[in-house]
Picture 1: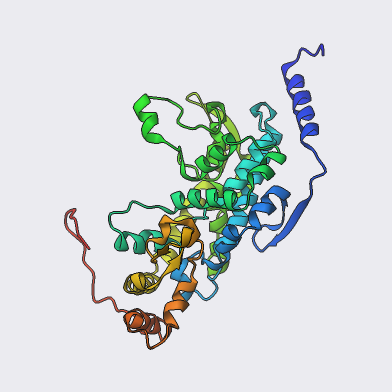
Picture 2: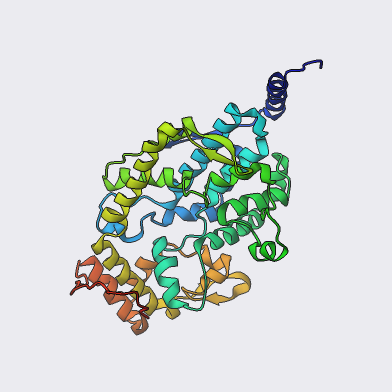
Length: 387
């Protein structure tokens, strides 16, 4: 076009891309108590309106904390909506400020989908299930909710026939599906990458777009939109003051090449705000997440689940039956597993003697007959304690 200035050429190229991307696509607006009115692309609405995603309505964000903090009954559904929104806000802000990053329509949609679906794999009472119940029920099973989120996402796409819909909205498969899953749980095959000494382990996006992997789950620094949402949301419902303002971090985020990789960085004057972020995290753990009564209640729920494990039967794929702890192996069974298991055990018929012990434990919780801490001690040197 006869334009020699690189900056002007990039601006024109960016504007042309924006014109190409703009379509007559409708958006749906949610009124979120934390972020206000948030708009979602119709492809994201297709994902939200699936049984696999709607299941998150019935899983409490903070597990047993609601037995201690009356307001902490918010769920994984609203948190996922918030993370999807913030993921879109951050990637769009980077696209607007730095057109040379070549962030396109596909990148934005994939980052938002990863934000929405990053917690699909949580079980009843959230972290109590994957950090307490499963390790005790299946000690030989190395299982994390991130892997379950990937399995549930695959099930969501297949069960609702979303691949053609994704392609209609410009996604390229399977490349973009890999990108979404890599944002949730990291590289798809780290073992082979190490074996072949491949420096870049991701398949979804090239190394120039390293920064896209730092938005939903930042494995480099831990500063990501997942934390931004749950800090604000948990503080709101717990009644704890939130000293961290994620909006400032959104404004000051820039992508800079550091040691050969494009990373999301922030202004030096923002270091105080980031310190507040980690202080907020520490405060939430001390005052809420690790609350001693909350821990006791989750310990009791875990014990009840262990006693009821083999007596709860869940129908999965091809009519196969699964127990509470084996349902994680089959997504058709796992989708039926939510916090309702608590009521299922609590209200089990008295003529079912197998559930009697588990039922009694949950009745003790309801009547506030909780286990008491008899004492604690500090080991003088590191030691291994078995179950």
